[in-house]
Length: 380
Image (tube, rainbow, N blue to C red; front, top):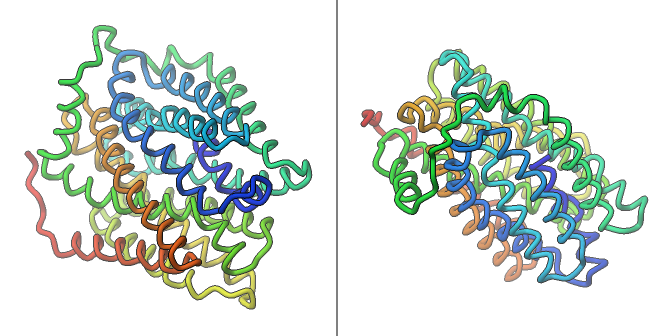
């Protein structure tokens, strides 16, 4: 639901733009507002999780997401920007919260699979949203119906998870306090710890690719390739489905070959290839081929997440998995924001989205090549 809240406007961006009389590329600015707030919230969230527990923090985040969606449905650009900021504050702590829970509950030899399985929630949220919301808002003839529906479902999930939170939040530290020193130490952790630093570089670029795909795919298919918004929503749903399959598959694959590094290298080259193929789409292409392509794109550009998070939890010092994950997300979101804005500027300058997809293809292949040639970093 946290993911659905952040992608719902991206899934209906052409309709939002049409009814509001603005450029569809403004969705990039909206998403950047989410991730600017989310980058800071992820680091702070790691500290909040230590004190209150992962489930308690997640419930609060979903309530905040519901409020952000209500504001995002206002139709006023400034109020929508505020809604995006609240969505960012809600989305940032979600992954550190779940990583903290699983780091305490999962055997080391199963972490790749379990973390990847947990991370299928992200593409699942985007898949359901991409499949259901475009048709729903067309039926309602009002784009506002989409975010309001997701807001209501967020509240339902908060109520549904009440009964398990004490059991899962049994390792909190009530004495933990937020401080600037703790915040700086959390960020320094991933910069000074060599294995975490390498994961930071890879995760930041891969996260940017994922964010650009989620943000611009629907607008690209509608405006550049001239498909209907319903088919574009189906394609977004297919990307999410690919992400679900990919996250489980790559998690099992990484555990089986015992090499998260090789797995991440393969993923980098695969997502780059898919982004390049994407730029050759035309309206004459068979829909089946397009759906297969975006499925593989989702399996790679979204499927990396669980492998990297599991390795982060392995490499993090004892008891600091949540802090390390929060710091990793902070830097990843920062890079994603920059690349998403560059993507938007390329569209504004050239009038089409193709160049942006070439850009993220180059970035993902470059980091995969760097990881392939890099020597193994020694643990600090």
